[in-house]
Length: 498
Image (cartoon, rainbow, N blue to C red):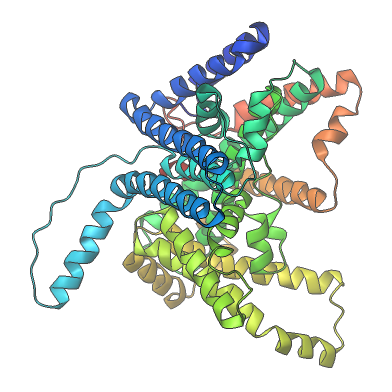
């Protein structure tokens, strides 16, 4: 069930209505049933995978709690706890590996042996990747680690814990929540609050605008150009790559905002997953603002355990490269994703290495780092580096990515920016112009966010008639200018494939 589907627009109000009517003691049961139904709308049998992950991590939490209370020898207690965590991770990651990486791993093994002139006949598994498996697996594993670190209690109620793993607003594409935030909120349900409902509704409308009006409109242009990059070479590809940066942002940010709004109406506060990332002045800052829940997950559960920055600069740089290569692999079983991750890791490592030279250049040229021009230059430079790496994310493999880059720079046709050529890439003049206006609205909203201005708070402070008019106009705008496909074939969210 997609957020941008008729089914969800029927499902969600029913869930909310019943949730606030039924007794407090069974609210979590109702949300658990709704969450499993939501997920089973894709594939009924894959709900067993969530259940398996839930059972393993639930039991691991209870065992960790028991070990902590029954074994008093510190050394022995630490050993037993590490064994429990290792078993929990091994079982969960084995399932994730099978469904997401088994064919990728077998292909690599085949190629390695082929280079040694050894021909292997390995099977290819016909596996459908379960929606959101990487998200809920990481969320469940974070609970195991949090109990191990004594940062959260071991939840005794299985149904409350199962709801934490499967909470439907953020189940399939995040944000990847921490148990110390979400589990505690789910354990104590709140009464209906009109102000939270208003704010949640505005968040959901903003998310639908990002997804249906911007992301799915931009996707038409991007898919047209990337689908025939030999014909649409040069500046066509440059424009499409810039727009893909917008598409993936609006698509993923849109999902996160809808999820946050849907949870807000239920009186659940999810963590913020995006913080105006394209206004970052460095790649490091970009990754502090982009997919915050995943970035912080890797920082807390991989980067810091590897040693972080505590063991010297070289080790710090190696740890960063490991984290970003792993992040790339997390996104998909392709070498192109790993290259994408490595590129973003290299940007940061190189940025730190040349930082003293940049500081010296700023002093020598008497530049003002706080000036608008200097910051704008940094923002544009950061976007160029990040957007270039998106080529490996968008292309169907490393070879295609390299062909696209070659086609991008081998053909010089800047005049297409000044005639009507771009209107022949799936979007006519009016639709292309509307897209640019909507992107302008997005930039304005992100700029306000950076300045600490929450537009939805400003709207909610206005008179009743203005709020009603704004909501009605917003709904009508999304309905009229949204992209729905033929026969309303609602488009999937990009991050559902991860």
